[in-house]
Image (cartoon, rainbow, N blue to C red; front, side):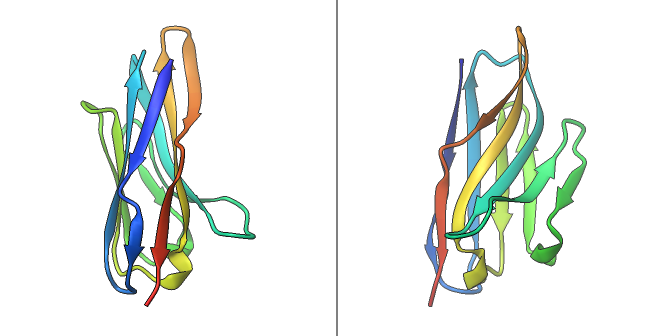
Length: 119
């Protein structure tokens, strides 16, 4: 079994920064693609950023270069550095990890962490 623990959300003012973390623990052989998604009230969940096992990253076009995803394979952790936050970034952020277990690759979601950007 694998557990994901997210942290780093909170309430910030427009223009400020936050760093989200998502750490996986348990029966992990290795990690595959890691990603962050977000869901605002009344909207569908959307992909924010992803990073493959080889380090290739992709981002939602709407971010305008403000967010950076990174990973630490030694810690089975993925990060999302969010700069120049805007009110429209307000959402619950979820990490999504592909975990290689002895039984195969499985997909896991974090519990979600709230990010609120407000003046």
